[in-house]
Image 1 (cartoon, rainbow, N blue to C red):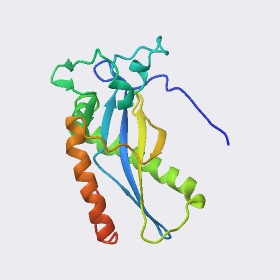
Image 2 (image 1 turned 60 degrees about the vertical axis):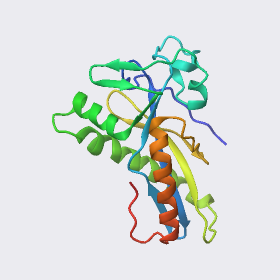
Image 3 (image 1 turned 90 degrees about the vertical axis):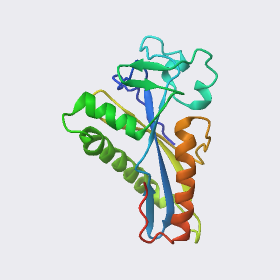
Image 4 (image 1 turned 120 degrees about the horizontal axis):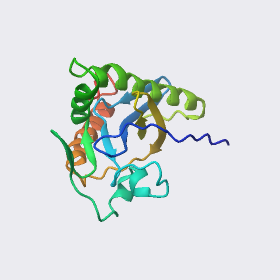
Length: 198
């Protein structure tokens, strides 16, 4: 086994914080390969402001909620009309931010630059592991994909988690997790016919 690792030198920073994007992906069949990707990912921010000179500070570099929740200095971060609460954003907030910072036309940076790269990252990773998947009738697997975005809006796959957290401890996840769980049931019960993930 080989591990290839690279630190992203120029991460996109929002209101002083580093972030990653969590995307839920549902694998419902290996033969034929059938994958569903939620089109409403969410952002997880670091608890403290990003500082490239303080690599030892996990609160400024790691976005995992289990790490962030132990930082006692958490506060709401604001800049102009944008604010970060509970270290999370929904995709609509990110879409609005990117449209304001990168585009004259609303939604273009998110829908035309970021989302296609998220999808391609999911497709490439699923295809790379397709040979080791074992077909089992009437089974499915949920994954939590984590991506980062750099200042040039390049998207980088960080990792893929099996059995991702379904915590509803924040306002963002309290809204999204029940929607996603309901959609999983609909997809599985509908036998994957004609259902669109959102």
